[in-house]
Length: 610
Ligand code: ATP
Ligand code: MG
Image 1: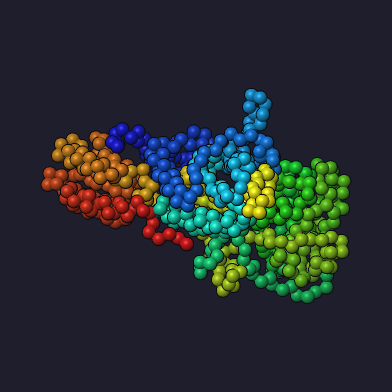
Image 2 (image 1 turned 60 degrees about the vertical axis):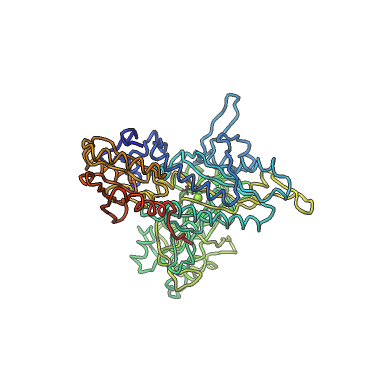
């Protein structure tokens, strides 16, 4: 391709809308244009990258025996009602775009495809003889993200590879899950990405085991915690660790303490010399559901610990009253909300676990009892400091039994705390957790039978009985991956694409297009490279050499062949975009020198992460 015909529109200045390097570079180098919030046009250069990524994904999926398919993006509401996800995905902070057709039927634009594929499986799969089977597709997904940002990283329309497998038993599901794990490692390595696999929360998709693949980069939205021995890696949403020991509280009889103006743990500790680990803090929150009444929550944490919202949401979903389903959000209870419910004000700065359900009596719409949850580090404290449930008053030397636990109320102990960098690991307390930032490019799940039971997808097993299918699902964010590659591979001058996913592998740059010798040699090298199967650009524009070099660096073509003054003597220069290679050589030698290196680059990273 000739650069003059490439519709290359680069920007000299950094676009104001872009906060992270990869977003800036993709805009500046003419790969994407923003059409609306979270909605981007993939320009021809990016489309080549996306197709290369897709080709690698296909190749590796096909090698596992998975079958490619293409499912509808317009999905009828009733499928989602049957799985119980319609309300959660469309009401409140739900992310599904939804609409009515001319007959007034409700439809959603697919954010994911569990429902559609499971309904198909119910129709197509009858016997254990057809199993296992794994179907995948590469297509645009739609999600009305609450905060679309960072360009392709969190779009409202983006390209995903999603696969769904069906099995006769759990063992077979585990085998395919393991095969997907291996395929994913090969995919990311072939794309030239350093990615790590981490334990993950299963989120709204549901199911049991799940693992995310993270491209490590400063700008990553996820915090990952890993042990130096490589045996533990998890998303902080999910990570577990040993909390630091609490500082024991001197054994004193239960006493009240006057604490005017000390509404935070920090102030309380500063003024009275407590350590935060000696205190129990109480959070009052409200959980809202797609169906069922709002549920007030009383959550206890050791004062030095931080609430993990994902763990809390999982605990609330599991413990909520049976009539409540489709957790929409959990948010702090405000004084205004209490008033709107017709309830009396509460002493927010000095609450304790003993706050009685009586304060909820007469609530207009809320469940009139707290769901009481305590993190294990709080439950384990023999003596602690907490609020007295009266303004400006705390209790010192409180214990769970002295406050009336079990007698007046019960509290469930669950893991609700954030694991932190520096914490000791469970598998080996000598090991500490280290933090890194990551971009989630893939996620694999063992779904179990949640969807097959809801959508009645069953098969006849070997002994002639009907059973629900076992399922797994496996996603890769194809467009996010392309941008993650830029985030991991760029420098001050621009993008440094790995050869395997670069839009073009080589650019031939005649320094002075007006010089017929240079122009001719460049043309002939261009032809030679094309004939050798190289994806090559010829920068035939009559720009200054400096401008062309700058553009080549910005758009990130891995190899540059410069045809300059040496052309008369048949000499050219070969420059590697990422790395230090810069070599003068005879034009006749170009293929011999370049092809083996290109071949190596096309294979991606040599070693695959484990
Ligand atoms: P996230 O936690 O980042 O919101 P998710 O867990 O909701 O993602 P999945 O449902 O597991 O995402 O989707 C599979 C893959 O699709 C993700 O691993 C990610 O790479 C990609 N992806 C998800 N949401 C987006 C988005 N809004 N824009 C671009 N890619 C996305
Ligand atoms: Mg995910």
